Image (cartoon, rainbow, N blue to C red; front, side, top):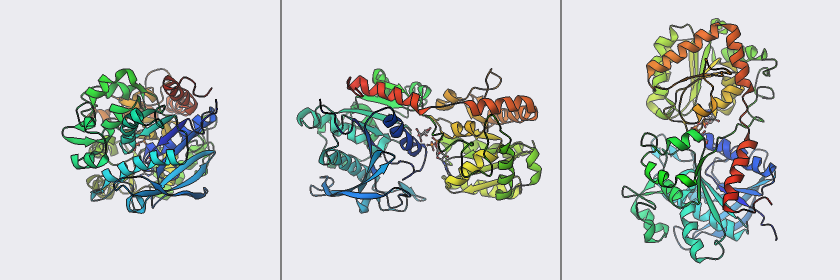
Length: 488
Ligand code: ADP
Ligand code: GLC
């Protein structure tokens, strides 16, 4: 049998280092490479954003005017391609949709035409698969932006022999973002009317693109085993718990890994001094550097500094972090925050900094470099998420010897061994309130003061290993359940 050029084609709205607003980009920057290393032939399709970082990768035009047929029958896209360490990444270019300053929204809210932009993306990506003869056997969609591709393929393969053998996988990175639009967009999408029902794309009279993915994909994955269980309950299911429970036999939780070629203090070019579990002494130099660049008081060199990095949204519990600051500061500690998001949280952080000069510093914005400097230079990482599908920042904080204080949800539960259990690498609390967060933070400070115990926890943290190879094998099992001969 002649092998097809690509067994799996990923559809994603972000891929690091080309584009990134959160963890999805990190996952797409490494999972395809991990699968390629295991022998799978993979490709990735993503939008050509105006703010794409092409860096060291050269991007070339591979097809002009690829027919898309959406929203008008004669609409087309140009397709570019880059070689990303042996994995081809295809970029869908249509300036009116993607050549903007941001990916999805401005400070005023979501772009008004996000529905149209990502329906276009799905249609263009499928068209590119066909016109560039990618030979995909599995189309693997990420999050709501790519969800509609699952529905198109489910219908097209009934009648079009080109798609007949193609199987589909939908990965959920965050169920709270569903991509809900109006019936008008459904009508324009050209899906058959039979898709508009409770078991299809309709959700309380809206057109729900993530639900389309869940309803029509052959298999569904999410990014940790705990989140896979949680999303079948009303508390975490965001209204989709019913359909997810009905699809339970096709739903699997596969824990993300961390990319240790980027997130390891032993070889991080950004750090003042590298360090490792065997010789963690360089972490102190990183802490001194953090104090200097952030203008924090030298007194903190011998007191614990808390770090927080993430989107300033309720998901991440930044509101309860703000609530505990006065009590936290009574413990003689420091706090460094890096994030952007909700305007109310941004201004509250900037205001509270004024009350604790030299003790609290917040960077409102997005800077990849500072995220490394903070992971290395702080002592304890705060991650009181209300829900966390997987969470990568706690994996990075573990790697940098900065034990997390986190809630017992989703991927946090699956990656942190809470003190005082044997092998503890962090602190976990169940009740998502500011009181519980404060108690857990107090406990961490107390343990920090016991240098020997703390050092053991730091070493346990640095020795944790969330390998993409292991997760890659689990994805291959999912693909093989759809095409037995994959990778043979
Ligand atoms: P989520 O995807 O829900 O935002 P994750 O923990 O999975 O959360 O991944 C977040 C990713 O985004 C990490 O790589 C983290 O370092 C990065 N990140 C988040 N906020 C910022 C920021 N303000 N500056 C730099 N990196 C950030
Ligand atoms: C989402 C989730 C986060 C997860 C990331 C990558 O953004 O919020 O928990 O780690 O996707 O899967």
